Length: 294
Image 1 (tube, rainbow, N blue to C red):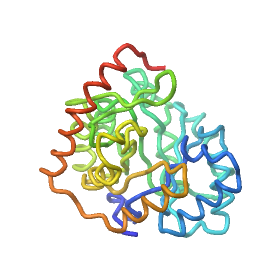
Image 2: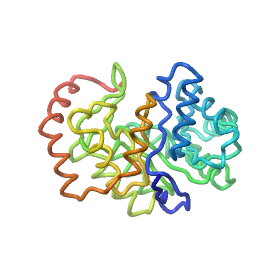
Image 3: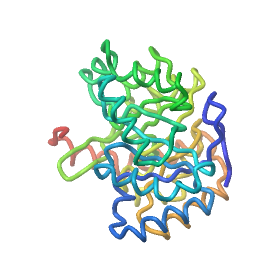
C-alpha cells in the first residue's frame, strides 16, 4: 500500500483509510464487522478513522477489540463532539477506554458546523484547550478538526489555530455535505468548496489533510466511476482519503485501486469535475434547496 506523510507530524499513513462511521456500522453482525476490519488491515489499510459518537461508542469498541493485539500496526484517529474543555477531557478518557489504548495518533474536533460553532470552539475554556493539553501530554500525537459543511469556517479556524491536520469533504463534485432529513446529503458548493477555501490554508501551513466524502455519500457514483472519483481525491495535495466500506468487496476493490493509483493531472481532474457539473450538480441543488440542516 502506498504511504504519504501526514503533513509535518512525522506520521506516515496509507493513502486510503478505513472510515468507521455509518458504513462500518452497516455490518450489523459483530463477527463480520471484525473480520472486515481485520481484512482491511491485512491489505495495508491501517489508518483507522472513528469517532466518539459513532454508534454511541460501538465503532470505537469494535476497533478496540481488533487493535488490542495490533496497536503498533495502525494509525488511530478519533473525533470528539465536545465543545468545552471539561466535556472533551471526559470524552477523550472514554474513547481511550473503548479503543483499549493509552494514546491516539490523531485527535480531531468533530464536525465543525456554522458560525456559532466556530465561536464555541474558540471560547475560553473551549475544546481547543483540551486538545492542546492532550498533545502536550502525548495522549495525542497530532490534533485536528473536521468539517462536512462549513468550508469558510474551517478555513478561518485553520488560519487562527495550531492544528497539525484536518479532515474535510473533498470530491470531484466540489460538494460539501449537509445533515438533512434522511441522512447526510451532498450539496453543491461551487466557489465555496473545501477544495477552494480550506485546502489551500492547510497546505500552506503544512498540515496533514484527510479527504472524506470522496463519493459524496454515494451520491456522486454514477456521475463518474469509482476509480475516477477516488483518483480525483488522491490527486489533490492530501495525505489520504478515508473511505466507508460497508462490504468486503469494497475493501478489496479500494485496496487494489490504491495500489495501482496514478495521479491525475490538473486538466484531467478538471475534466472529471466539469462532467459532474453537467450531470449532477444542478440536479443536486434543485433536490436539496428546500431542505434545512438538521
